View 1: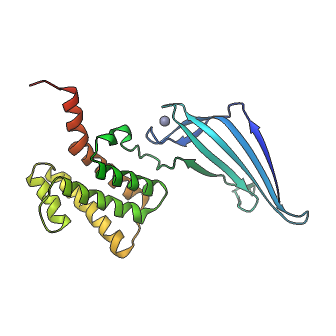
View 2: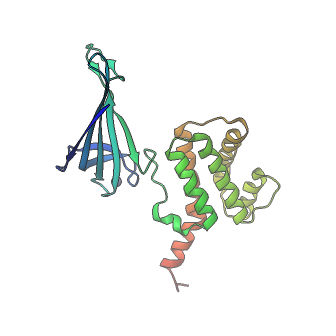
View 3: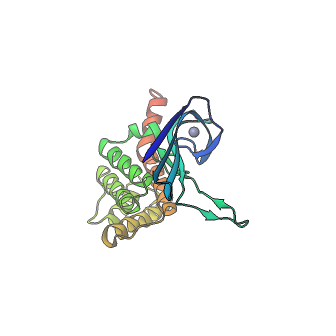
Length: 227
Ligand SMILES: [Zn+2]
């Protein structure tokens, strides 16, 4: 096996990458990169690969990420003109889901237990662990219900009791019941959900966390002393 490292300090060409802070894909520029080329085998048969390890900067929010993009001699297909194409695979650190922004620094307004489960659920979602992400979403609902002293023997009744306490709107409760059943199916039937379903569910839960914890605290801080 042989590998070759080449350090490239010139900024690279712009690429569209899912940003962890901005919503969706944004233009990023590689600030510095290391090109790693490797080969395994002999003169008759060898497997070759080429990876670029890049420190990329988002041109929107300026956040830095680590990106590995590469291809190898074993994964290819022929396009409509019968030209051999080697598709590139991409890995991003910290991991993220395209279009999911997360609560960012606002998560520091959450009670410690809620914050911990929120962060773990976000990790499960971003590393494509859909069963754990769905269970995490359900656990988040359970924790919010407990923290807000919701009444009832099961999560169904607890969510409805948050409507009686005017913490949730009836429309909000209806959506949360959908997430409740989502976590149910994941925990008991180990049934994974699609990334799209889970990203939407996370978005809804983030709105709940904003309404219940974040906005009241921000309002308190901004309008301190106002009658
Ligand atoms: Zn960005």
